[in-house]
Image 1 (cartoon, rainbow, N blue to C red):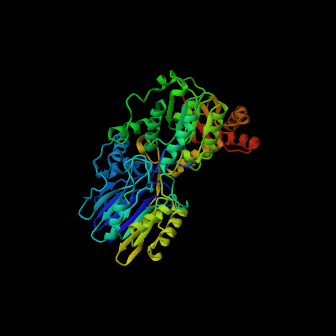
Image 2: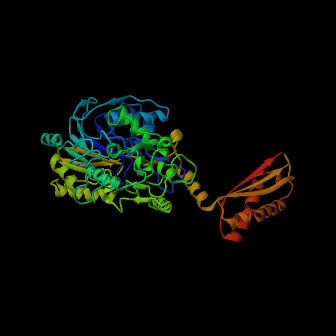
Length: 547
């Protein structure tokens, strides 16, 4: 029996990690991160909990990557520290994976494959990558064959009929595989609520050309750093229009360099220039491709829009195109940045005002149905999406001919089994999410996150007293300081110090020799003042210094 256990990616867009299991062998399809919520303060990424792999670690034989987005490969450093297995992927995908591992001080056994190159991964698993179109080069779906069942994993895909790089989703091959028999289709659900077909990237190319021919100043296009298809047609358009190009943003520059190394990005000789060189060119001869479409601090666009000194800053008459959808939760920050740009006299174009400046890399409902009709699976499980996307995608699959009893919405941790009789829920595996910092990739506990939220909401007050070593004599203080407080609260800190001093005086000389009792007394005095004056309870840290 082929078993399928999602560790992430079902119920959220991101955190993609799917365990395929046959007999004594396991394969992990993708190993991605989830980006943190606004309330997860100080967190860079969220990774899947890999507890389900730890019971018999020798059973994990490999990781197979579908493409190079962080939500599909960003958790590799965490996994490979514990499970040093081979990682398979296309050349550009592995280039990004290698970079991510090197950032963490790791190396890996990275093995490249290409679309149509079926290979024996282990005794039980044979895999064939199938070319698909997505918003990053070298994306593939996967055909997976085991002794008991065959599955197709779509990866992230769309059915763009005129992709920039000419690499169409290989429906012909998927049709052949469908004729041979596919027991299970696992398919991308991101745009399951969108009717029709996702527009082609060619629409963005044509929209850019129309807008750019009207521009008289500098042009800045803010986009995701991984969308190298869009970078490619911007480079071609810049050459036609006689503009020099600046790549602004570390991730964008890195990705472009890696894509050039593996032959996935063509850059005409002499087209790229530095920010310093671009600042000396006539404004009508400059195109900046930048990160910062989500208004991230320290991104390329935020830096260009700032008032700090620098070689190139946006001016009245310049054109800024935000070529990306707003990730939920980022809308307020994007609105603030757009207003900042307007205040500078810059013309701003967004997907709201000009829908053609961005299209999705994911299939809409008609494309999802076409894939189901092409593969003709006996069973169907929607993946990669929030719960509402999964349910809508299941409905589409049933409409496309999948037996309703064999189309199942699963959740992270469900252990599904596929055999001749159908699709079965066999049980549950442990799953979860680990918030982490990039540096060291150390997990941050729920208690620590709660403490950070309290600090952010209430501010921090520190009370310090200097006392005689081994005795009860106060030598200096208490002194009270604060961070993250309102103006009124800051002004009340001397009163809080007096409150702490009064509480100390209530303690006997002998009791003041106990540091814990001294800290409790100072805390009580400070809390009383804040409660009486403001009804608030800041995060309090009392300190006793003995000399």
